Amino acid sequence: MSRLAFSIFSAIGFVYVCAFIFTSFTDEEKKTNTEVLHALPQIIRTPTIASPSFAGEAMPVNMDTRERLDRELSVNAYWQSATLMHIKSANKFFPIIEPILAKEGVPDDFKYLAVAESSLRNVQSSANAKGFWQFRKAAAKELGLEINDEVDERYHVEKATKAACGYLKKLHKRFGSWANAAAAYNVGPTKFARTLKEQGQSSFYDINVNSETGRYVFRLIAIKEIMKDPERYGFFVEPHELYERIDNVYYVEVDKSVKSWAEFSKHNGVTYRMLKYYNPWLRDAKLSVIKKKYMIKLPRA
Image 1 (cartoon, helix red, strand yellow):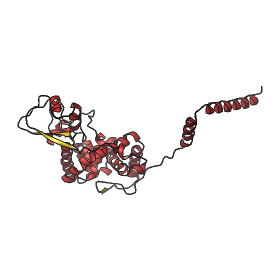
Image 2: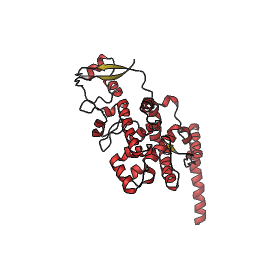
Image 3: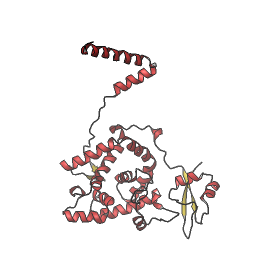
Image 4: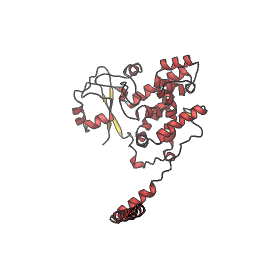
């Protein structure tokens, strides 16, 4: 058999095999495979923002800033799993964070800083920063948060948010803009001030700094734009898929030591897990109280 004839024979055989395999599928499998075949061609576009800004301050637009923002928009727009979780969690926690920002006089856009820092989760970093706002122990104590073996208010979303507001206002006053405040929050005020001085600049956008901080404000802008209008960026979350708000609750005042949170939970008709779910700042199985009161959040039945 010639090489050409062999090739033709092989091709015909391959077609017959494929046809046999396809005809062996059920009608539903045929439909699914046909749909997948037609769905494979993708349309992936570069996300854009007409007038980028953060906390009411316009981002200066030039070749450098356009490229830096483009990177963060692309990374976050196509980081599907993380962005979906951000959108779901925002429905639960933004209603808690937003009123505190407004009351404390901090721009609403800073709720996206909590997204960037922790994905709206009570996480712990490799540098031992904790909570939504990622405070280290010394800084958190300076801001008035209680931290000991039994209590860690870095995990208390309301108190930690208020502490973050106080810190951000100090940074804004010191560095003159909210973009600078955000960058200083990330890298630390001492290092940020030294960088500005060494490079003779006054704006975050004009300094050369480490990669993480150099991307930070652009990342906040990107996260804000995507979460404000997720469907524009291809994210569709049904209302029932959003995480429920924490609003059907009541508080129990505790002014005496609690020997056992397990007994406390049972007495108040909730599980131990739900007690810690609503009060993640309670870090032990008991609580020692000395001339202080604590408000314990519990779900209504």
